[in-house]
Length: 355
Ligand code: SF4
Image (cartoon, rainbow, N blue to C red; front, side, top):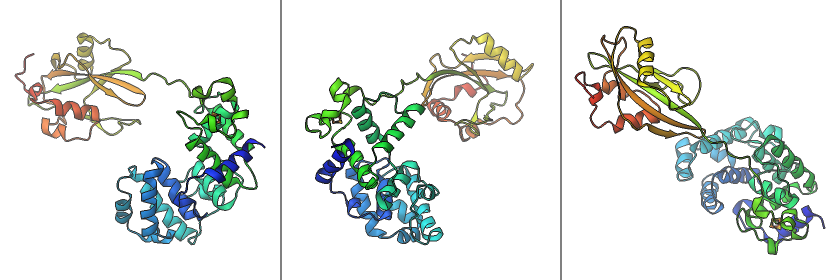
């Protein structure tokens, strides 16, 4: 018997009894898929039951107020999922007369429905012969075939999508898709897979080659890029400072920061800071002092930022300067907000400050 058939047989004997599997109602399947995106099955069950009790059909969900929806969603997190779900319910009710579209292309037009969910709904509810690939499917296929292309690389994504499609049972695509996902979730698990009980063990490449624990592969993580930021905390004779909104894109766009110098390494002498400050405020710069020896460290996904704060005394009043309390209330990056709130005594504003 081939792999796909074996999985389907295994699934009919071992599938978990989950409330959204009672029928193939696309409303219920869709609700479960949205809830399962970042939530464990056990937790999703309670929410699924509460939602289907409160809103048995898609139009009831569409007619609910956003407040009601968010209240029921409370505790699941990622509230954008709930808002998208509510918007989709309205779209299905008003644009599609309360009937869920059937094709992947149409389903993709609904808010918050991506390729995985569109394929899952279309195959499970409408028998469309399209394979799904989620984390479970990547793991099962990678181990079963010994495929070691990284699952987060372009070539790996393409390879496993084609492989999944080639294993699909066209007479029962929904059953097969659910079978392989369930098999990955309960048998071929990330840690301690049940190889001894596995129905496809005799043809599993990873099992035969002892590489189960190594598959699937992911691309090596790049170390976060280091960035040193030197903030110039200008202090003018009336105790004002300068904060500017950041231009361009990026996560800090539009947020206010002190004028800054950004460097890829730690090297920046006091003299260089003075020169840079003089470029910004010609003929006005007095003493330049590093406020703290230790940098403020801030981690972003791909960045490791270390920030130094330099007090730059100015001889003339700043045009558009902010008082300390006004500066503190501007929208600013977390790194700066944390630095502000760590300043128990804002001595650096004091015009009589001496290091
Ligand atoms: S033998 Fe083990 S690794 Fe291979 S498919 Fe079965 S459970 Fe997964």
